[in-house]
Image (cartoon, rainbow, N blue to C red; front, side):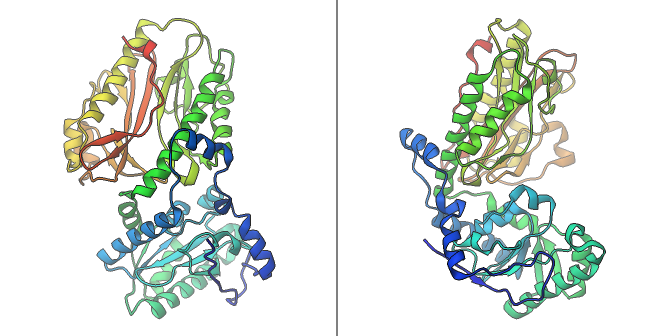
Length: 444
């Protein structure tokens, strides 16, 4: 389906300004858009064999845009300015060099509470949005990042703010209350000078993204299945004598083969590097009898995050008593902290009800649970001992997807184990979406 938006290229010239190609070039380029081409035969054939249904992306796009607008209306905001590429993806289903634009502020959009969505696109990239009905107008982005603006960043920030303020004044009925998800100091100051009242766009977007529709869950099931196929390749490739980063490369490669996008961390460790946690993969050579622990943190098919963890035993040595003890304890924590999940529970209840080990004896994970969608999302559910310092409340609702976390390693030393499942909250309880098997040989 073609949803070609209006391309507005008549604004003042700027560094890297969008240039409008010929209609023939645009039409041809639209057929080659990665979203139009889809995830590819490998992923689709595996989904079909597993009985999985591909999602209707038009339904997802309409649902997501309305979720954003729901919270704009709730807070009486004229609109939201989005710089975070994952928030732009959520509101518009457009992508452009996602990791690069995360640290180079050169692409943004304006989503009004009512009316046309305006995407401010990177140079020469107007053809990237023809697949989505959520982009109604494309303009050239005006960045004041030092990379492109140099010592003229204040001037460029003022020009950016003037254009944004003009849109708000022209289209938002006099409402000057605008949310923004992230913005540098110069842009914020320039917006305020234009009379814009700035509010927290992160809150808008996190609340919008919390509840997934049925079609999003279909997309997530597909992404999980592809991730688990990739994990299986990595598992079969694992052998003593490999470097950690060599093993980790299998997950990257297999994710990309199936239409996945990137992996946000390098959290894989082996042997003594598993305790404490948060060691990213290295050139250490995995030895026979080592535990190998990892956290996928994977942005997969359809841009959906698959965030699951497993710990494996490498080689043919039998597990030690210490390995089996710590693995069994971590597995029990995952099981017990999943089995009572249900809609209507408050975040405080989840914290207070959770099954935890003595923090004076064990190193544990940062949080007990967190939301997941296009990436790790709200809420974050904290351990009881830090609830008063960091905890915030809310309620589990059907359509939320949360990750149940466990990391365990004794403070006195020895093996460490990382486990994690991705879980859908249903109308009556929960459904575990991640199915890659645990290691029975590591259980007591």
